[in-house]
Image (tube, rainbow, N blue to C red; front, side, top):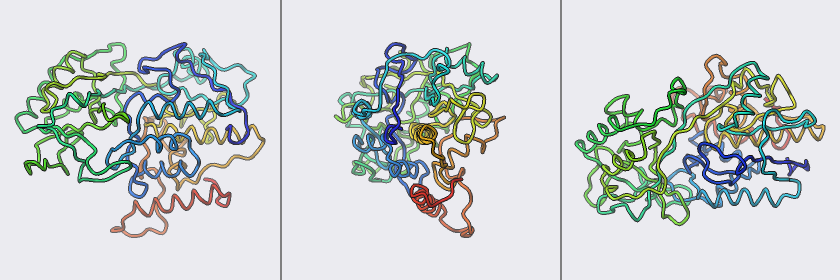
Length: 428
């Protein structure tokens, strides 16, 4: 909005009021993973979304690119450097006024263009006010946080560096992950320990579902003995070059800071009690003497039933002066949340300037995601969703059953986005 010449007042309740998951007061603190996932703009929908956001001038992607870490084909970032870069850019904007205060309840009536981007950890007062306004309780799901390990406590006589299939990605060299191998006996013992380990219980939330893309590792283990081997512990594309052996299962750790001193356990979100985490994760070969910079945890996420409550420009139908953005709208993931924030800001700036707003074509990742949460999804079964190629309209003409569709969808998306940004493509 500020880039469009519209003054912005940004209200951030931290550190005046904290949340269950944040540890600091940085504006864009990354609470869970430090990964923005795949950066492949041709064959991965989130990688395509990265590229579209870059073309739209996204501050989030600019900061992510400036602070990327080795992570195979993924775009992972240094948490602190990323957060500081975004906050510094906002603080340097003369039209942005940052105020550290909580907005308890609905914003004052005189605020005419308001974007509510309170994330999944919306303060209770605001969540209750929105629920009262809409006549519908907010939906919720559990989200979990993975542990972070000090690199110098990992045993590299057992562990080794390698990206899956030796894939080289942003800032990487094909050997970006630490791999801890398990044979069949070790794997079965580890799964048994996960199942029997003491877990945090939240009885008042026990009917709250988990988000399928961020399941606690022990919940995955309970789904079947082989579930983890076909999930975060899959050994495909990995082989210890010292022995030529492919392990039965593997635990991967990804760099978490620019210094390379911290690594997070990929896919190991957990609700195990802290003492149990230390005991059980030290069963993993290579982590027997691991020291943890942060242990895993669990927090409750709140989101709106957006297909029912929001219009096509992210305005609350019950009070159109309020727009919503980010994860509270029912998108899942840092990138998707930032993408919806980008769109909400464009819509609000156009409205404040008295201009006609334009939605991105549904053939783009931005447009497909927007369409999904504002009417494309079934309101009766709405759950948080990552961007994926299933949200895009079919190719026309149909290239045929054996065509490689993903690159075709991506090329169409970038061409249509370019036309939209130049104002020559009708909005969806």
